[in-house]
Length: 227
Length: 366
Image 1 (cartoon, rainbow over the protein chains, first blue to last red):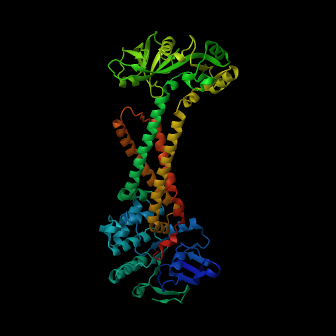
Image 2: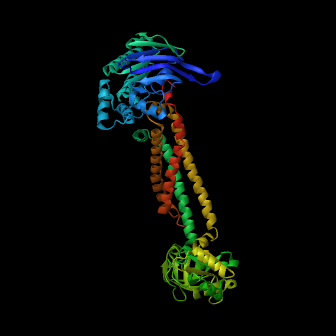
Image 3: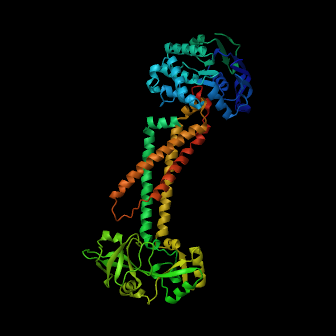
């Protein structure tokens, strides 16, 4: 079974003459442990596709399946529950809670999914150790480097063992060297956990970390090809 | 909720500002309430002290004790009204008292009464009075002879009673004969015939409401106006005006507290739109985020109440004794509940904004 299947998905903002088609009959399938790089110019529909795949937006037409979940008809409350249980997000610039430590940032996501107590703590500690942050668990984001913050964000995305992890420009705030380290880490973590991932990126130097590159232009996906 | 608590403890800066403002508002509320209670209690104590639950005035007095006059025949009619258990004469004269070793006359309220009430025992023999303890601060001592009014009518202080002042003047409680002597000597135009009083205190039969018995007296006896004790208290000069004025100020202060909290959390929410967007994207719902704000509002209000309460109590020690400030637990409880509710309502105003934060705003770098 695919981790993500999008069939003829269309997203239109506005109506009538002012309608803007952000995603135009997009069809995409991502395998269970596949890592897909989504590339395209600004305004091409990358963010819209990522948002629909992650249950942040509902499509105007088409169907979206994440694992066994057909999320197209989910209401806002169902989408919120779906996101916290089945989706991991890594945002641009990490977007951590600034007054929480690295470990607590992971525990917030765990707590939202109902994972509490010592088990959740052990899981967070284990993830951070795996991400090379064993000695940084007690630091707040302000005391971490850009690369460390992004690694914490990766840990937060993985803490609930999601079926699909969505990365939104994870290296845009990092220099090339750190960016490559982060991409390498993302690949290692995603592959090691057999989790599907979509990585939105502008940076063509980072696409070779993906199994497959998908291009999007004016809301249309181009035929998929190898990375 | 844990996240909200951690923010409060780890980044207290902004919350201290809001808490400081609420602390000052708490002090203002407690002081205003304390002044209102002090003024009210000092003005109304003598009437509140009455065990009787209804008071009858002559109609022409317009509920003013000093202008009222009820003769023995009218009193007998009142006593005969169905539902009246007992009656008791009551009168008042406001005069200056010459106190030994005190230069200026001390204003006192001399009461003539027939029966013990909640604060004052049965009347003493002629020429003797119970004095209100508030008069101690003005030099009155046990056993002294006070000279009342321009006529210098002598009365001896033979006991103390508390919480019996009238319009801020300490009470002297005398039997009917002594009071009539003081009245006749110092206010000859207001002198009353023997057996007459300014007002009649009425105790209804058990189970009968004061309101009901007052209506029955009004219906049965010409030339009188019967009030319940509470109505008589509110009819005292200035009392209802004081209450409504202070209530308006206090309510406005609560409104200001609510606005302070609402504005503070509106700004906090505005500042956190990005963070809330991220939290919503990873699965937090609006209710969870709003509950965090409510918890912070509750904690700020509680902290402000505790600090404001301590500061107010401390402040009360340096307030001159002439200022009628009374800090009562009941008023503090009402203020605490009011402030906490106001803070919660104030923080809830941000809920709409939180609901409108789109989790999709977390992606795309916006």
